[in-house]
Length: 374
Image (cartoon, rainbow, N blue to C red; front, top):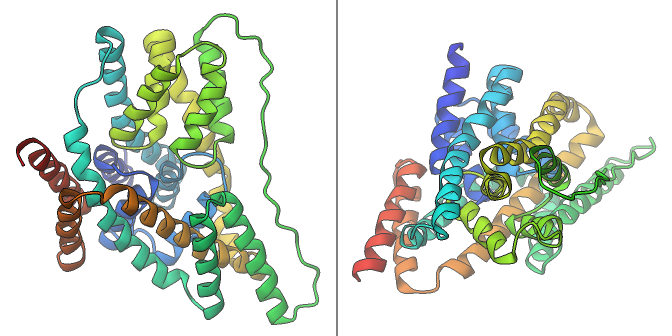
């Protein structure tokens, strides 16, 4: 393995071990590592990756690791980055699945998670500010970003908001430039797969195919994942809803992507081979989407029309991150302990150069102390 691949593996393995708080927090930590510290990408290029990643199915933060790996070390870097990022979550989730199946309950981790949530708020806020400065290039883009923020806070689907912003921005800037050429049509190619097989009893192949289907069409957060898996697994009688809720909880409180839930469920359904099959099925589409999409991103910048579209989508993506931050803040800062941890984290993020990873560790320890002893 050459030096660049080793560097990619170490960076994203480290992120995979400490990436708590959901995609917005993961991307914020990634920005600190690959833009701020290592200068692998400019902030503009990083923004382009965020914008395009938001438009394809799959876990955004995991796909961002693949894009960054591709930019640093080519196609091999794509696979090394993605695998390194999801590996810690898969191992931890598989271990928890074993304990759950064997003993029927999960370890008590709530006090540690309590402190992580307010800590990541400051990390996300820092990334929103830095990326926002690059994304908000004109007054028109500012207005577009505010509109996206408002509609997402009112519950409009993130993908709909992003695509609508892209189309609206493209039309506006096209008309402003008074180009005569015919507008290209930008429409999302969302595809739905019906695998069309009768699932009478579970096998490794069937587990793989079900999770491949979900991974290929999944947009949105862990709540959307819950709905997909509920339809695919609970309605078929493969899992009870309680077991599914426990599985989603595991994905939420382990580091890395919440889609590591697939590992947990695969183990429940078909043991160790089921865990491997479910994980492979869930993440394989993301590797393929990024492999196909990444080479086209520089070409998008070279096309005037696509550049308008990408600028609009980028500012919309930052607005979506801000929307997530606002919602998370309302859900997290419910008592004085959370507020104290959030304030300490904010001071560390904005007034020092402490790594986000250490801030998350600090938040976790403070959460444990405040819950257990105060």
